[in-house]
Amino acid sequence: MALVTLEQAKAQLSITHSAQDVYVQDKLDEAEALVLAYCTKAPVDPWTAATAPLEVRSAILDVLTDLYTDRGDTDRGASRTPSPWDGFPSPAVRGKLLRWHQVAVA
Image (cartoon, one colour):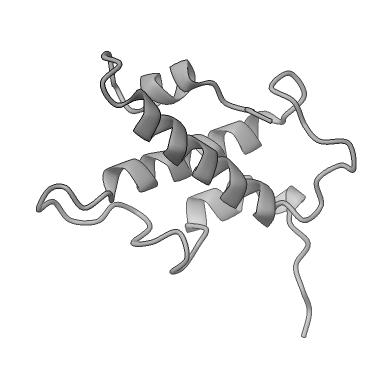
């Protein structure tokens, strides 16, 4: 799948070493899965790194940043989204993915 590369993810997070590559890749995979699950109007043929819309790749990087920032290893406050399952996605991510999400009407 890999719509965003590890190198792009590390650039987003300002990481210049390889000590956390496995952890960052795990969080990148999680972010991508969360974003793609939200994209209920995605095309039948899966996106590739070359065909994924910019707003989808940007949303993946936003979610990655939240997951990485909120990993619980410091005393800093939470970033935009306290948990990917509590209020996911953030308003910024929802805005980016608006055309790819089918809104349910009750």
